[in-house]
Image 1 (spheres, each protein chain N blue to C red):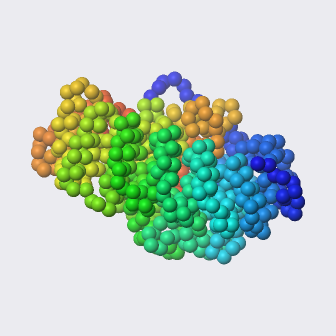
Image 2 (cartoon, rainbow over the protein chains, first blue to last red):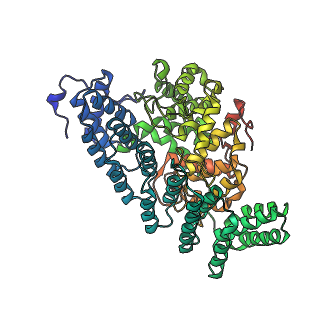
Image 3 (cartoon, each protein chain N blue to C red):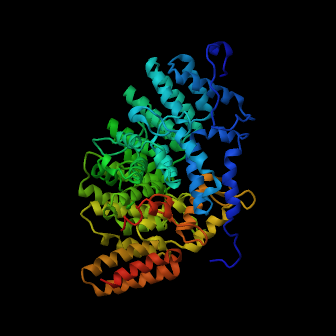
Length: 299
Length: 326
């Protein structure tokens, strides 16, 4: 797209005002500067026309983070009653180049709220996640889509695929928590017991992966189970001669909880593990393990 | 700790680098980051103050520029990211921060700013939008509460509702995300912990659990990442460290290793700090690298306030230091 002179002959572009300095010559991209000049002029008179819409497209292609342009574009789209499915096409295209642009994701949401048609959203999100399985915007938008259009079914199976590909994907673990605990259908204790077993199997695949360790403690806190049930897993990791600070840390949690119930052996055992972690297996976080040790000792 | 000699903080080069930012008008980058011009002034000015060089940018010019970004449109009188850009909460916060550094709040109509920020609160949820049409995000909860606190006008919004929303964004791992259910992220955690500190609600944070999550962000090379299994980045020297500092657990990370990592990300020729060693520098990472070093007690730097991300002497001058505690 170029800026055809005859389309714009009634508009005097407003040049960039950068304050007291004389306007500096722009060495690169005169097209962008020209488009911005026209934008300032049409925005000033709030012109909502086809040519203004084209102009926003041109500016967005150069600079999608220019948030003022997006708002203007939405006003024009709605005023001209444009086909919003074509706007989804536009976003489909733009997201390929700017998958982490806040404005683009929010724009998508505004368009979909107007359309109240979700049919294209999950495939759209999946495309983005195929390129970057940890894209924060994509997962957050996915949560909005699921909540707004009640698409809870099948979400756990969807997440399974991501964890099968990369068991270290923290975004996918978080989404699991969302799919289970934000779902209006509350999970049963049986379901949570199964979930805990599922996570235990995943931890065995990579015992040094922090995400499922955090997650399983979150699930246990919501279930009728106690952290004790992870003792077998921690021992199993140990027996395989795998040094996992997370498994050792989990043992510290278990011993601490038993020490609080009066067990002196657990208190001593917990302190011993804290010392190993501080001095040998997780020295970079020495002070944290010292703190855990002191906490245990004071029980 | 290594024994080999590391490059010290290159104070003079960083000052020159920040001063040069506004003269690069031949670069396309300068024009494409127009919407970040005001943010750039905040990042640069704060860094300069921490480097004991706040006068390297002329106060009169800075204040004049900030004022030129304010809109005069009833309840929409916030600040845009640059002259002629729409008002937005983030730029309104940056403007107030700059004006507080320059001790020039009297140059603007504070009531108008308060009205603008208050208009962005969603009454049903207590959350804040970034601008009048924009998205909801805990970044904006921080932006609003920080801004109003600096203006001593927290009374203008529903603080308990604001806290309620932030707590909905607390996750099973002790961290916070951008919205209820969203993944914990160090940047969002800074915003939520900072906001809670401002309104004296830190008792709602599980400091041990979150402190563990935060110190777990340190990687073998000393750098910090923002989420598990992601790359380290100098900006998390701020987002992670400030939250740890507010929670009184800064010593849970290895300071020497982190200092080494930040110093290695300096550009020894042109000045400035990059996201990680060997990358291109920018003013955003320059500030957060320097602010992180300040929290770590690096010699020769002014102290930074972990809640407001402003030099501590500035926060003390307006009487807000030490009013939050764990």
